[in-house]
Length: 222
Image 1 (spheres, rainbow, N blue to C red):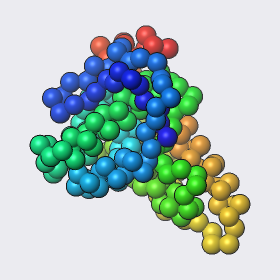
Image 2 (cartoon, rainbow, N blue to C red; image 1 turned 90 degrees about the vertical axis):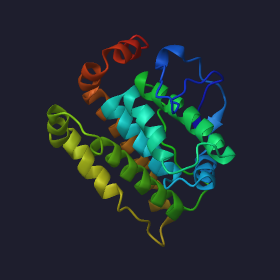
Image 3 (cartoon, rainbow, N blue to C red; image 1 turned 135 degrees about the vertical axis):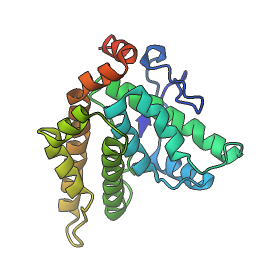
């Protein structure tokens, strides 16, 4: 689950994203993977919850707040904006967007991946983890980036991160070793979490050059 706020900063279809300056403190409210997944299915999105959150993180890492705006429009592409179910889904995604942005922009150690709860079957969780990585990698490379961005992604340490996440997209579970499955899942999700934060740090200067105002506000928060 991912913590949200009582006074959300949105990334709406108008293209406005107010950035982290308007955030309030995190409350006990949270966003559940299954809730997001169900909302996406109901409104007709082609994305599942894990893929969508991975995509969001990849776009934030490379484009900052601009990526957050593009993310919402992409995930809801092809859905009916006037449909009540789409509006419900948009509201939930906006909460996910602003919570994720805050966790990354404030360099919070509790940055979380949107994945099924531990009570879910190991195979379901492993599949969602792979989908998360697919979404993140798509977010890193799908937007037209600068030559410098492409250079950074091809160099260490980001090249290693990309190779490792590609491997994780093919991860499975052992049929007869529940303990080993749980240990591997815990290690891999922790690696992904740290890798995303590393990528965010490594590309800070490129985001600053792209959007210096938003970057200055983000830096003021930590």
